[in-house]
Length: 546
Image 1 (cartoon, rainbow, N blue to C red):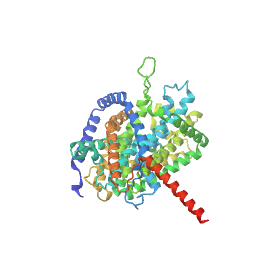
Image 2 (tube, rainbow, N blue to C red; image 1 turned 135 degrees about the horizontal axis):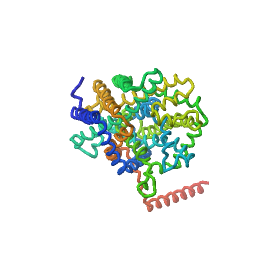
Image 3 (tube, one colour; image 1 turned 30 degrees about the vertical axis):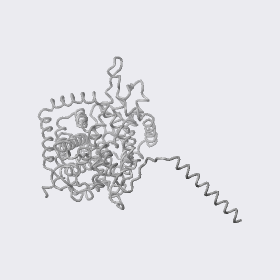
Image 4 (cartoon, rainbow, N blue to C red; image 1 turned 90 degrees about the vertical axis):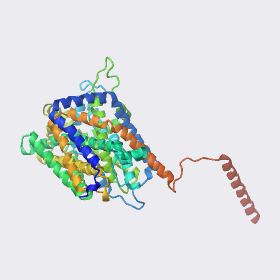
């Protein structure tokens, strides 16, 4: 154990801040829920448009970077090959980025839109439009903008770690081109602590959503009653799994768990697609892709602007869903970005940007297209009333009930529960790995200290335990939106810092050639005239020789 490597001020401040938030929430749950709901109304009501503009802005910024000269920069040495194969790389970034939340929302999110559609539509009067948007909006929320938000922090972090060879994995270090020596001051530490707290808050949301889903599956399989005790036992069990994986390290633990996770996910999707309503799933998913392509900008910027004007109904859809999701991705972005950066050695910046957005979006498209449309088919055909179960018994039971409509139902519930556990574990072994990296002064041989990784693995379960006792999905959504707000400005700074550093390095390189071409037409015309004269002289000599 090398204690000198630990950045103790950041380590201790992050842990104290976590306790300072969790303890009051446990002691005063009602007051805590009221407080965060008021903050939610203030932030989403007054600044929701900032989240939407940020998402769209990041997407186009990364598109520009990918196809600019900056995108050609390799993250590593000249002849260095990618550290991980494409399949393992895609599996790790996908597992780290979405966790068991993909199983939760991909299966049931359509049902919320089915009852409360966007754009002021009426579920009864605009039934066809409502159904189409119900199968579409989830794919949009988990699509290119979400993965662009994840990718942005990865680019400067990977650049500093693999190109500039900075041995420190910290947000403050990545902002050094803007902050200078201020990165080493209190301001730099505040930025790092905010990142850690944001990650802990986002992790708490995901664990607190994933644990009841796993518990509902275990209850369905074993017949045990779904109690808070069972949820607590399952949460601690999952924590042990991802703690061991994180302790083993990136290649021995996290990579192997992600590979297993990817194989099991493919099996589940193929099984549902083949044994379920294959044609309905195919056609509905294709239709959803078309709707997104047709309405991408509308969906990305819809703020319900006339909600407060007399005569227009306020649905709160943008704040409850799109703003919430962009804030959720934002909270996770520094962590996922750090992890993507860590596993992307040997790739170019363009490959990281394009690969992350495409593989991430495609994976989510398959989950929402197959799992979501299977549930929608059950609802529309009357084979199973998903919406009633959702409203009366809650989302976890509704999700497990949908899985129970498959052939070999009990076996598939077992597969679903195992996949939920592994998805959750692959996200949080990555989280504890990155948290350990951020709380060290430097990372030797690319691996943070094992005891540090294990400490954060078990610390990650503190907040979700508190949130589970606090209860309420709206409270969890609120925590995500509030936690993500300061990161809007940090994301802007990360983009600026990367462009300043990489463009400056490119211009200073011996092989740099400016993109701007200045033409001297007089000299060009003179050269053309000289070429013509030489050509005529050559023809004249040829004639004389003949």
